[in-house]
Length: 66
Image (tube, rainbow, N blue to C red; front, side, top):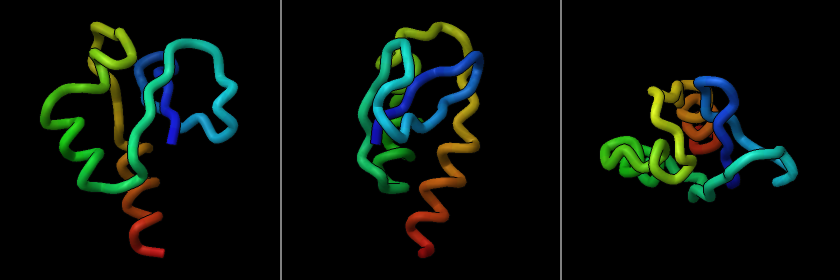
């Protein structure tokens, strides 16, 4: 899934058409946790501020549960 930074939040780009620098993430909780641990989101999206990934984490958890 493609993700982008919008203001201070990471959002999923469903259609891969949102403007700005995007990054690709496997839609698994383990990949998300690994990226969080390595602080990869900020580097991949070239953002220096803290990014809120709660919405992304909730979405991945929901996908795994269903």
